[in-house]
Length: 461
Image (cartoon, rainbow, N blue to C red; front, side, top):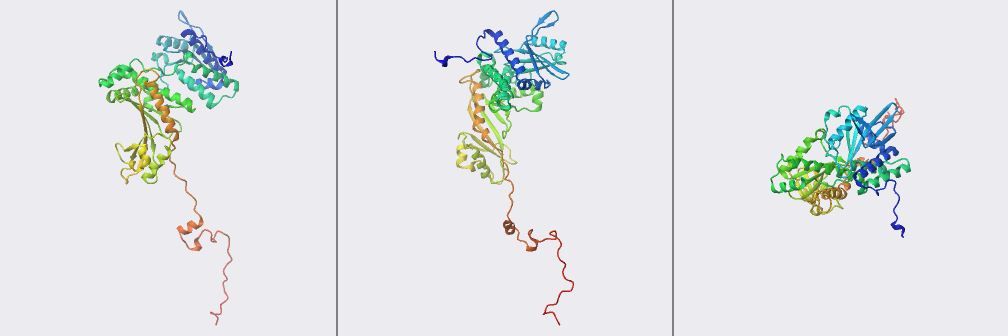
């Protein structure tokens, strides 16, 4: 038999997973074991939750008594440094299983009785906003115990970034982390990517097309939350490829009060049939903005770029066009003049390359900024695959970053140049006594002039 058919031995195999319980147990054990074995990875996951920088100990299915019952949380994490000890219970769900309110509240009670610091949940549910929990529990139970959530996609992102970009000191530990990454990327692991826009997606899309959607419709709130979760997942996915942390671009108020963000999306859906979002990419010239128009079945990605502060209007346009030499001709460019309101001058990149003046309106006004936009068809199906909304959004973001954003650099003024002595003389002719190379009073003492100079023949007699 050919060796090509042989299966490579894996530290964490995906074979032998029978049922959801076995899938959940194996994923929990694999993750917690690697957290305790790979110091850098364990620190990356626990540090944001307030754990000290110390050795990570992990356990699975630890028994606890609560009242007359005995309960087994999926795992426990303990981090110690000096006299300080941080402990968290762990509850894990895989596949399409969702976290249960009564189970989480029970574990919060156990953590409070035991004096533990936190309860960490891990599932495929992705909250729309980082730091938000997908399950609403009784807030009174959070007075002494913190509740944190990690989507499996975020766990995978943290693992990839630690191994490929931040580094692992020990080669064997790096290999162990790589085995976890391979396991989590396998469909049978139960650590799924964002794959469903929810049961309200099709009815909402039909209501948008018919013009019957209203802001009070509960379908709008559900889809708005799913859309923000999709954008957050897109940032995690792109961040894994770039080796950097990409997060939704939200205001402070939206981060502290997520309901405000959701209501704004709901109102926008009801009024225009569109939803907008944005991603903040470290090192990029601006924020990647996204508009999903359900009425037009169109997705638009765009970025705003500050124009150069000097030069003629056409020179500023050419500065941008040169950076888009590899971009498709269907990219739309728009210029905005200083102290002007409303839309600016716009045209396709193909036209602007031939005639930069089409983006110049009033020549007496300086161009303040440019907008670069790319449109693509939006899928209509709720799942993933061809013709689905999720894949059309993910593809639009990845393509726009590759074709446009990664090639853009901010404008920088040229540094001043030193002038040669010849240029100085030509530009500012001065008396030879005042030239900087002439002898000055600071070059040293000069001989005194004679008090009684010898008279010349012309003055004698």
